[in-house]
Length: 422
Image (tube, rainbow, N blue to C red):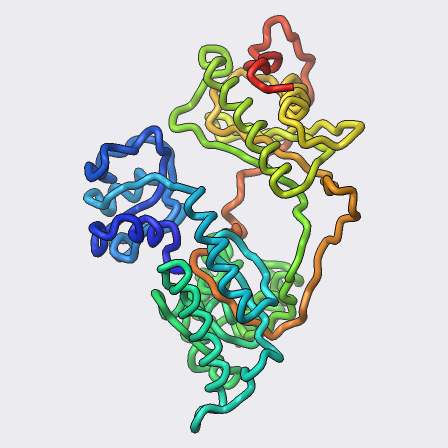
């Protein structure tokens, strides 16, 4: 979907069309009176850009960017909070519309899917002098139905595999339809910057630039042994295959989640002692929301984990495995509290998260990890929700576990769960 969150907001507020608009931050912090839209220049905090309209992107704003950095680029841009309930509703509507015409779908997030079109009626038919006319017509029907059901546009990339389809879906936004044949790879794929390959992040991109590899075509003709020195044999092979348009990943039409988690980055650092009440409320809310997510999706889990990031950017995780799986908020809160007792909380916190893993289904049926259809594929995509290498949290070695004195250690609310219903 095209700038999905921003497009949803413009659907509800058409008077804002044509203006630079950024979605991000927290509702309680930035929401103003109707019509009194806050501006990026007035924002303070650690929030990030969820998405932005194309007018804001033209000024350098991009998804995942810190709102303070975005404010320096586009101070007059409007800033609205995310409304995930509405986004989920329209996401469901868009995927249901696609499934009516092309039921083999890999769900890649709230606004992105891959579709397998091979074998669908009419897809191999020529139209007039266009041998791919039937394929183009089907995809245009999909786009039209999505707009009819949601009021939103989407961009579609058509190619022989997922990697190429994803690249194509970004080439003609918004409301684009891009088809790439194998014969066109040298003329249309190779001139693109190497960072257009999904999975080539800032660090890999910088290393390639240092080697004089700026375009995908440069990478495609670089010998494997030259890539293996800085990247290793496995990643070198992947880079070389990607640059030459090779991708054997199947379209995964069904998969079970590995874990369910929630986390939040605070607008300002919170101290476990002086901000104990606020942290306790946030901690309990995260546990409650994870439990609700599990119940909504039909899972329970045995391994409860927490994630903390301190003001020095050190990230610490701890897990606790229960004898029996649970989707109960109180049980998750209790186990997460036990994890907290294994961390020395002596510094301010900037992030807190709760995770439940080692999942099983609530209905008792065995887990089916995935059902897949081999390539070729079609990607219908907007912004991607998957992370890129080089964007993950900084890793630090775990310190030796210290003895915990529960009389003096400020365990924020580890025993304060009276607000959870039994």
